[in-house]
Length: 151
Image (cartoon, rainbow, N blue to C red):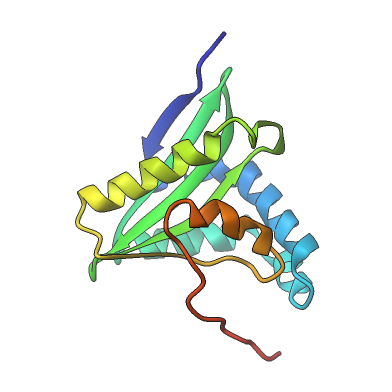
């Protein structure tokens, strides 16, 4: 039995996350009741550009899990010059979600933030995806505020 491999990199790994990010974006479009079109129109090239620009403001790490030569999950984490860490994005292929792959990714990202002096940490959860709260609570993340947006 092959064990999953944790692969760590920077912005050079962005293209590796593309199919998984697209699956996550599709999920967000399905669960977001009011902003579905935002996700349907959001393209990876735009997300990639955003993450590349974020990397210029501090540090960015990409954590990937590879199993049998295929990437099955990822986590993008950033750490700004203000020492605020953020989980930018996390996704695990549906077939592997009950196998602690998300835990491996979160722990690697949070450890990286801690090792690099993060003072605060956050993650944004798409409205409609509140089912993810229980996962994030295991790592000490709780809702603090809700931002409402008018179109």
